[in-house]
Image (spheres, one colour):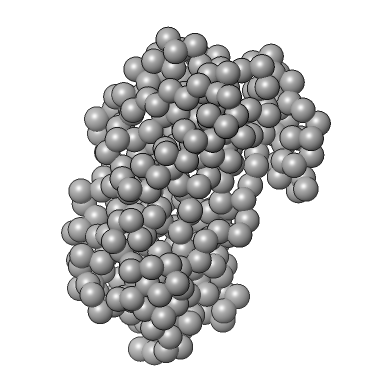
Length: 329
């Protein structure tokens, strides 16, 4: 199956790729993009969404216009950005991240909202249930709560001699219920595997150095970075600190592993974003968001950086290597 601590938050507000004064087809569907993070951090996901639109016979500049708004992790700006999209009279708003979905729902109860990625939409009261969302919002969930337990199993297999695991969590995560469920499931999994679990809070880059220092003080054999909007956006200093402390670290997405993190396991973000285009197509053809069930991810990617493993003195088992979707050498 191979195939800094900074206080400045950059805000990018990028309009549609169609020039403002360009003549746009009057019959073109107008889609709003509301992303919690930045273009560079999620370019692969956005391109997958565009690819999904092409597969459902939509072409930008011909029968679809895309209005883009990026918060660059400055979640306090999402409400204003969502209102901008509503003012542009978009027909659908596609969101990335729970904060963006909440902002979009706060701005409109009539324009359909499609979540390309979200945490726990039921726990955050975005929808009534996964099967029958109700209201004007539907889409896809990362099912993040259940994944930390699986990550713990993989960590155990990658370092069978280790007995202590530190999990870095974001106490400011707006998806607090989903995060709490994920932590509870991870604690249960840790006990069943005979592991000691140490929870370490980090609400932003200013906390990262303290978090890894705490993990080292607890003599952690492995670190799991629990996904959240903040931790997923500011992954570069986390990778650097993991290397500094020589701590094997598991992430929820691939980019940190490409940059030197040891492992990642989680849903394929591009696959979710491509699937979001199918929801857009259905809604443009008359389907109601209230009647479209929230989908959970079907594809999960395991990525291992063998160069990092060697630098840490870890020998990854053959069975784990064979299950990896990508080995970085």
